[in-house]
Image 1 (cartoon, rainbow, N blue to C red):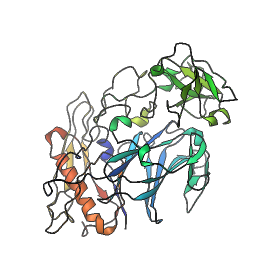
Image 2 (spheres, rainbow, N blue to C red):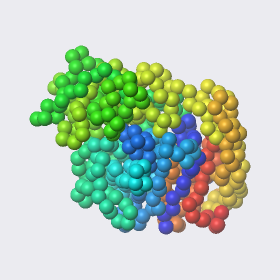
Image 3 (cartoon, one colour):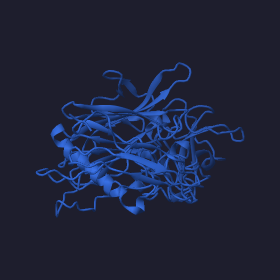
Image 4 (cartoon, helix red, strand yellow):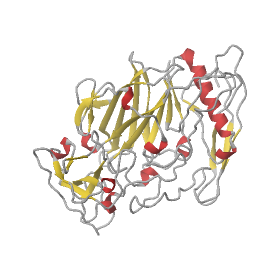
Length: 450
């Protein structure tokens, strides 16, 4: 039976370090095989918590077997470590061979403050195979143009209102199947605003600042385009849907602006806008969606693409006036160092035992200065020596994620857990990674009851 491994504290580490063990040969094999994985990137153009505050993750195998779903609160709806930042990732960890066919469904949900009911606003689905020899990036952005394109499914779930094996993308129904060649190799920079594995250099788009003083344009209804400004630099071109005051999108914090709200589009022909024949091509839904006042075009900020989020407290990055500046400092949380401050120190003492049933040891951390505060104790990852006759775990490429979803059968589970444990233990033992605090927590007792 498949199991879900939750990583409740890992959001404290995934912005600051990639657990990059793909090039690390494990001692029990001269030529270990690289583990195929699927890294799901979650992002949104909506404002948290005004438009959404939670992401529900549902994953099932081709035979219909469902992996227990997860509800992920998004910052700042809950404080860290309970609230998770956006953008973020979920890692799908297969058996050694990979190749499993999965149906992945993400739902952006919002707690209605007037009724107390949680509404499913946007659903994004994908039918995909886990790679066998690489870590592939599967982007599943939750976009406002798909808001309301939902229908009741099994139980308390919602699916997109498209036909079977379709999903809503950019406001229209498109095939949910994702080809392997359409998924690039995963790198942190493609998810976290172009930053490196430590979050340094990441950038975001301040919607109100970038589109301040821009005109509201009415798209040509025949082809849903607006003129490209004369002399516009494609590297400094941004487009946003203009919404009425106090509606969807990113609205002003004070009364000094015109009051309009903005939903920035990505520079991407499939998910956002594209330049064609001297005009800016918009998603078809942008020209027919009720409530859209028009479109604004800015040439003052660096172009937002799929890797760049909209600035806000949900990123946990400091908001910046535009995307011209470098990365700002990141405050320390629960033992994770504040950049620009002295690092906190995370100390984990792993249990011992065979690879299949090594116990989990205690882990504590002490806070660093300049923003780092003392971390709470938690379950730490353990490393056990492999038992005689146990197959060598595959080489691990464990990239930081909200959760690791194991799609193995129970017979394969021991090898997968041993791989993750060994990878995390080796990562933690590296002095260069001091100050990072992470933990594994199994949702169900397993591995001999430990």
